[in-house]
Image 1 (cartoon, rainbow, N blue to C red):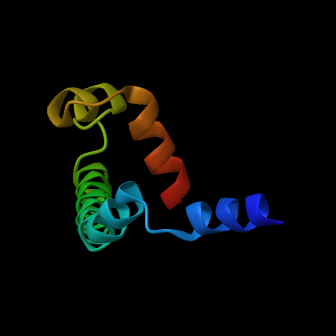
Image 2: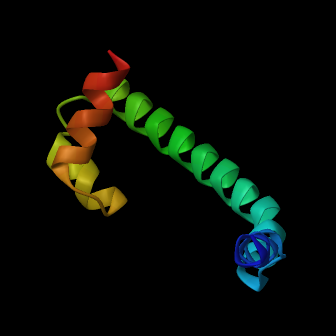
Length: 81
């Protein structure tokens, strides 16, 4: 019984990595929000360029201009249809 109680006390005690994780949580949430905003801006830019000049802004041209893969551009375009 004493061993079980000691194990529980060790398990329930604040562990340094738990505290570090809790301190980092707001920063992670903020970083996720910023990343989502950048993705939305990127997707909107792709949509506008393709709508204005679809022949000029092929998947390859967009991928080279944005520094990503053709597959990512294709996935974004297909998802937005």
